Structure formats: structure tokens, C-alpha cells
Image (cartoon, rainbow, N blue to C red; front, side, top):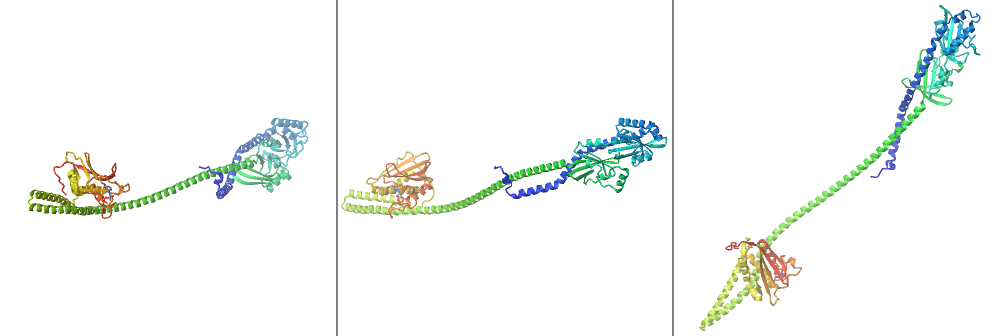
Length: 618
Ligand code: ADP
């Protein structure tokens, strides 16, 4: 089979267009779900990042939380607060705080009196020391004084660093003398976050981003900032208010706990999947923003792959479809060929049936014709016999007239001899008359036989007697033509053949007559009769020395009315009748040319068992 080419697959442009349209529509429909799937997968990978960020921050905060209360218990601090002017106390406290900050790895530790003024600080050596600064405006201070626990995150007004502040009151008994604050910085976390592709943003209840690995996001709002919040920020100097501006971040829900965030920044549009965690103690939300780009690319690749697979599937389907179509076509062709063949066979069968019918009709006709022929032949046998009789009568009347004339003259002679008393001569003449009469009686006997219509009976007949009778009938003609008749050599035992005596005689007479006719011009005519006997058959040959049968005549000599004789001399019925007679006996009559010239007719008869006497008289 010819391999289908891509041209043949898309011979018609329509299926290709439809396929393209279907693929396009499929891609459009499938794209959002596919992209969403890949985005969610990407976000799920960043779930661990979120957890880590949250835990690390929470850990850092909780580790520091208890420190101010512990530090506040140092007696030196209470002493400083009671007597801030006492010599040597503050430097000592400063150094104490510095060492403590170093050992605790915190940014700052400082001591404030009840008014919020900083008396001692770990950063006492630094250029911009906290000492002398008043932090009464910071909530951690007021909370520490008011409720015993203070915590706050803000941009340090002195240091310019972002920090988380924990504060605890310094007590003397139940009296609150002041407060100790511990500040930790958080910049180091941002450095760690910057390592990953994702962006981390930590924002507070005001929606202002406090920490982020992206510096340009810091102090920008990730959601709406309420008036109250702005007021509080201003009051507590938490952030530089002029820096607080909204990030152009649009958020659309993507899945449970996930939003699709789009940032239209200066560097163009950025797309993320945003997930959030909560650090309740700090009032912070941690947002991890996974870049959507790789996930989108993956989705596009998957879609392209699916498209390719569908295309390939379509190609394979088209290939098999074509193959199937061709197979169906072939089957159809075979079916129609089969049908054609069947219809031809039907036609032929019909023709054959017709031919058969015609043949049967013809056979019927032939049978009828044969029956007619048989009837006609039977009649002709009789007619032929009558014709032969007529011929014979003519011949015989001649034969009779001659002896009658002789008888008359012998009688007259006898009378004359009697008158003259010459008795011996008279006796001789009377004897001649008697013999003549005998002969004429014999001939007339045969004529009677001929005149009778023979029965169809077939039985054993003594062949020798029949032959001799026939010769006897022909005797006059044989004698007249001076023919020499030889044979046959009869065996000692009498031979009996199956036949009818008179009809067989008639056949033989006819054969002898034909032989004589054939040798009419022969000066020394001769007829040979030969008998050939086998166990079952007797064949009698009548052979003449005439001109024989012409090659063209041989096949038709047995046809009725075939004659080469002059009109009036031959009817062409003799052999035809003879043939049928012999056939009726169950024998055959054949004609041939003898070697050395002349015709030979062979009558073959079935041999019969020797009989005591002839039973079948006709
Ligand atoms: P008919 O003798 O009336 O012609 P037959 O049927 O007896 O009819 O013979 C048919 C023809 O067969 C004859 O006309 C003759 O031509 C041919 N025929 C028959 N016997 C002989 C024979 N012995 N020799 C040559 N021709 C013969």
C-alpha cells in the first residue's frame, strides 16, 4: 500500500483548518486552568520558604522577647534611675549594657527613665548614641511603663536602622523607675531572602512593608493604609511618612490561600503568586511572592506539548482514518466486483437456462421428429417394399412372359409331337413346361411374402435359408446379368441370427440389386458373399466389383432418398430402409469400399442359439 503523504492527509484544506481552529479553541479553554495548575505547583514549592521565613522571624523575636525583663532586674539599672547624677554609675551601666548587648548579640540595649529619656545605652561609644534621646513617643516605652511589656518595630530615629524593640520596666519593688529596651536589627534576614528567586515582604497591620529583600518595597504599602494608621505612624515615628506609598500591586484570588499578584513597576510588569503567613505576636504578615514567569513558561510548554500530542494524535488518526477509508474503498470495490461477477454469473446462468430450455425443446422436437421419422420410415419400409415389388413385378412380368411364351411354344411343340406320335419329344417338352411352372410358382411365393406387411417381431432366423431365398428371388436378374456369385462358405452347423426372415431377405435382395446395378456395365460381373462368425455376431458381407462408393457419397448412402441413379430407376430408399431394418434387429449395416475396388456392404447381426425350427414366422 502506498504510504500516505502529508499532502494526501491534508488534501482537503478543510480538515486542517478545522483541526487548527479546534486546537486554538482547546488551547484558549485549557490555558487558564493549566497556568493556574503550574502557578499553584510553583507556590507549593515556596510553601517551605514561607514556613522557614516565618519560623526564623518568630524564633528571633521570641528569643529576644524575654531579654528586657531579665536585664531590668540588674540592680545597677535601678540605681542609675534613682540617682542618675551619681558619679561613675552611668559609665558603669553603659559598659554593662554594651557587654550584655555583645554577649546577647543584639543591636542595642538602653535604659530610659520614666520620662523616656535615655540615661544609659550600649551604644554609648557610638557617634550617634541613644544617650540623651527621648523615646516617650515610642509605644514600646509607654507599653512597658503602662502594662509591663512593650514591643514595637520601627525605623530607628537615631540609628536610621530598622529594628524590633522590646522593653520592660525597671522596678524597685512595685515602683516603676524607668524602662529597659532591647533592639534587634532584621537586615540580616533580608540578605538571606535575597538568595532565592522569590520575593519576601513582611508587613504589619498598617499594610506597610517593613522588611523585604527588595529594598524599593520597604516602607511601601501592600494594601490600603487607613487614616488612623497614618496618624499612629506619625505619632510613633514608626516609619518615614514620606516613604509610605502604595506599591502598584494588584491581587486576584488564585486558590485557597494563594493570590495572583501583578506589579506594574518601573521595570515593567511583574507577575507573582502570593502566599502569606502570620506572626501573630508581632502583628506581622509574611508574604512570599513566587515569580509567575517560570510557571507560566512551564504551562506554555505543557500546552505546546499537549498541542503537539493532539496534533500527532490527529495525524495518526488521520493516517489510520485514511487507511481505513482506503480499505473500505477496496472492500467496496471488491463488493461491487463481486456483485458484478454475481450478476454476470446470474446472466450466464440465465443464458444457460435459456439454452437448456431451448435444447430441451429441441430435444423434444427431435424426439417428435424422430418419432415422425420412425413412423414415416415404417411406412416407407412398406412403401419401399412395394416399390421393390413394383420393380420386381416389372422384372418378373418380364420373367413370367418369357417362360409363358416358352411354355406356350413348348405346349404347341408338345401338341405337334403328340400329333406326330413322337412321344419322347412331347414328354420332354411337357417336362420343360412343368419345370417352368415350378420356377414361376417359387417366384410368386416370394412375391406373396413381399406383399405382406411384416410384423415387428425379431427372433432367431436360419441365416443360410434367408440368404438362399434372397438369391433365389434375384436368380433371374443374376442369371440375366451373367454375374458370378461366390460364397458364402457356410459352416457345418446351421447359424441362426436374430432378425425377421422376410425383412432380412428384403435387405439382402436390396444389396444384391444394388451390386448388380453398380456392375451394369461390367462385362464380367462378380459378387462375393462372405460370412464372418464370432461367438456373438454374424457378419455377412456383400461385395461387388463395381466402381465403389464415391468419397462424397459414402456418408450419405444411408440417407433416405439419396440416389445417384437416373430418375425412374432409383428412389434412394433401399439402403435407408435396409439400415433401419437391420438396426431394428439390434444389428448394424455399414458401407465401405473394398480393397481392389468395388463396394462392400456388411450386415452384422446378433447371433442366436441354434433352434430346432424357426419360431418367428412373419
Ligand atoms: P437406389 O438404389 O434407389 O438409388 P439405394 O438406397 O439402394 O437407392 O442406394 C442409394 C445409392 O447408393 C445408390 O444410388 C448408389 O449411388 C449407391 N449404391 C448403393 N449400392 C451401391 C454399390 N454396390 N456400388 C456403388 N454404389 C452403390
